[in-house]
Length: 426
Image (cartoon, rainbow, N blue to C red; front, side):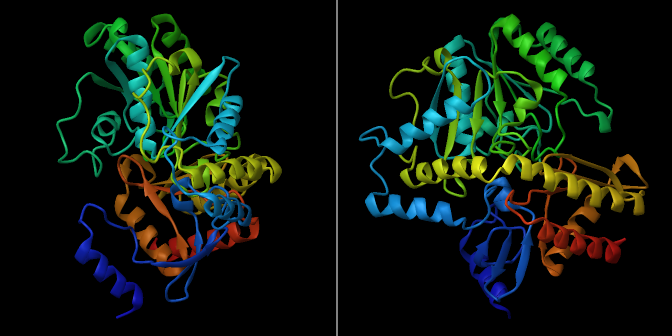
């Protein structure tokens, strides 16, 4: 039995079944966009910890910043005795968030916490209860965020009931025949059939769906949502947890639509792998909650704040927005060539920056998802030495999230391995 197999056996004995792992690859060390397991095997990483290490594994500047912070202190609780790094990071984030309205921030620990707190803030500000989300959206695994999430398996199955006053709309998706006009019509019908606008506290949307399949909301659609929310006093929450911090070629994907969200949720790429999340939004809305109503013991974790400050420096100085665009262009070109080679199996290739997807189908038919091939590609990729992730409501999308610091030649090497995978499976 290999060491990976031994570790998997030990994990299965002590981890609850619900916290599974995609592959029995136990990591020994990682650098930039490469991982080496405990048996010495090298993998090209197209997952980046699910869009967390946009700045690459073990970036030396982040390591140095965290080591310096650790030498001074690791925790005091920012709500008891705060520290300058948390203040400085909040200053930078409110400056960088889209729009000219004065903003404020809070820090918590996970993406789900950020979403929960955004909803709390919206309800405190509006004195309303309803929340609108979208089919295919993913916002977390807590009870509230599962309710907001528009994907049953594996996130919602068996965990209900969920909070009341949550409503779902179709997400505009041209490939699947859902137009922006249809989504807006569904919103109008919701206002007439289920809940009046005056009881809606917030509408939450991912500018590019993550777990839902990497579908992008049209900029004009987001602009129309902004106008509708303004008309009815509804707080517009943009969930930038997977799309943020240069992943799409801009610091935040919302920038492509030229709108200013009322609130934004941030996590994943914010701190280079250290646990940190944030809500950043318009100051008058953010101040609606009473003192003590927001926060958490580990909120604004000092090591994560130090890492987050360095992440912002790296994004700017290493021009990671431009690099995301270059990576996305390369991947789209290579994957589109594979689509031309396998038109009956690859239904669509799409990307926004380095947020890249390949949707697998039967017979070239959008309505015949090929989840079996998707699972096989992910498994065969591990055999070949490339780490891939799947997503999509129907489990038939391969998503690519390479570190934005990835050398293009290593990205190309990973795509070579993917090409071998497809040649063996199709």
